Amino acid sequence: MNRPKILPTPGPGWLKSTRRVALILLVLGLAAYYLLPAWAAPPASNYDALRLYTEALFEVSQKFVWPKNEEELMYGSLRGMMNSLDPDSSFLTAKEYQSYLKGPQRAPAEAGMDLIVKDGLLTAVSVIDGGPAARDGLKPDDHIIKIDGQMVRNLTTQEAARRFQGAPGTAFKLQLIRNGEVKPLDITIKLAPLSDTTVTTTYLDNAVAYVRIRYFNEETPVELAKALNNIKQHKPAVKGIILDLRNNARGSMEEAVRSASLFLGNQPILIAKGRAPKTEQSYTGKDRDLVFKTLPPMVVLVDQGTARAAEILAAALRDQARATLLGAKTLGLCGLTKAFPLEDGSALVMTIAQCYSPKGVKIPGKGLEPEVPGQKLSVPNAQEKAPGPPKAAVPVVSPEQDPWVLQAKDLLISGAPKPVAQKKPAA
Image (cartoon, rainbow, N blue to C red; front, side, top):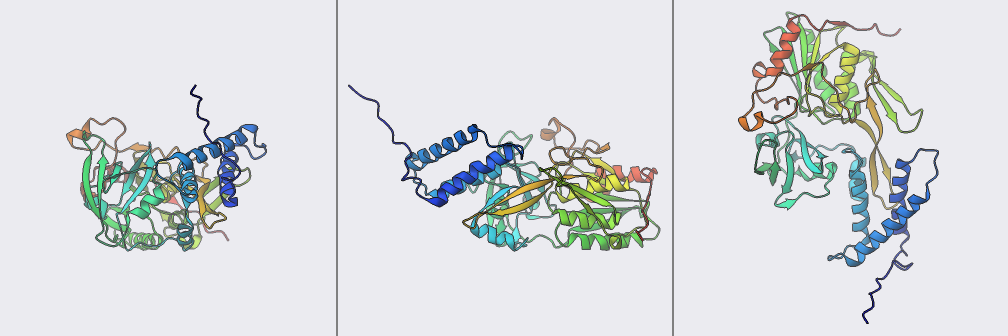
């Protein structure tokens, strides 16, 4: 008689490592913490989940065709958990965490794109105009399915960003899925240094100032201050300002607040709200940064690639300066992140607060809906049939030929919106 084979079960010997047990408990403990109200005790089901996770970990460690050590399995678990939260949350190894503590470091060369995981696919949410990826043919909303012939799996946005940084000339072969295209596309991207200039200014008909912020970094507020002071001194006085924040998904909360301060002075710019009650924090600009006593009428161009610092700035200008948003709905991605170091030197980086506009409008997950939809753009036949709202093209053409820029210019010259007198500095 053939008896069913009894498979071994996890025994105490397999769990002899204190660090392994601690990490398992951490994984399930964090899951329980973020799924429960602060006052609730973990129900029995969470202990069932811990037992289930331990059992699954044992099965993989014993029976997966390729041996995996405990660090690979645990780090993979933590990476997957953090990746499931939001695009700004991630797991860092000890080496990556030490690099993180040094603050933002400008890479020698990069691809010039910002990535998120969207519908399970690594997606270019913005492609910096004039950058390597844009020059090599990548477009916003392209989905990357292969890198150098390897399928993209379980790659966090932070890991992807680091993947596309390195020595100038480093090449990557990508296979893409693009909306409107029947077959996957193959392109090669070569890393190169990004231009140091993030802010450019053009005058349209000598009457309207067009200011483009390609992306945000620590120098952007300084560049923007110089641009606005030049506009202030322009003769004749401009009838309005067009601020182009399309295809701009890079930048920190601090860079957004410093930039908004140039327009708004000491007015509230951002409200950050955490999970726990009474964690609300307000961020206000500084009077010494204010450029205009009376801010000219403004139109802010936004699209589905507008996120993070650009969304914070756009929301503040709409609430506090009556700026008109023109274009398409923004991505809805901005928050305050914090690193939590773990026992072995690794760390969790997670979003601990969400962004709200000065008037209390929530941005994450919702985005900003423009008051004026951008006019439908002329696109190739393959994309003409694509459903959904109009999407802005990457601003590679001159502002004088950009349909949304011309639409914004007409809005300003027609007399709407009205200029905004700034509040007097506090005594």
